[in-house]
Image (cartoon, rainbow, N blue to C red; front, side, top):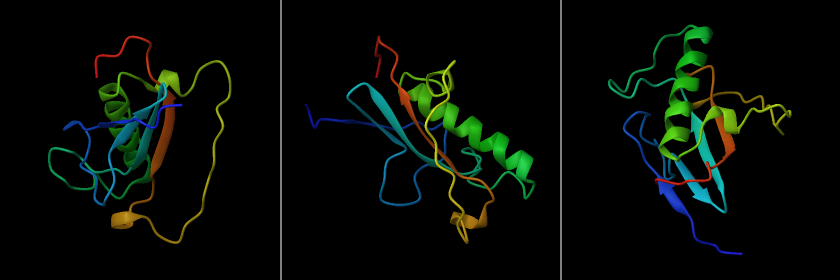
Length: 111
């Protein structure tokens, strides 16, 4: 098994705020780091509303996955994905939502 991986970076999602990548590709999978509701163009949190935050998080996650030649449909198909829900006392920048993902990379890679 190869230990090689490729980092993923896109300006269509917020830059990582710590020592990590937006995502990596390894062995046919993309591992996307947790996305928070930061608007990439401004660097600001979209709003304090949990619904708006969730929409922005999904938009950011979609953009990261697309930069890795994948998509949300590679996370959620006809089968239920494995998942974890974790309660924490606080998220970065005091946001209400953070979502990460593991998805298949589409078979023809352009990354």
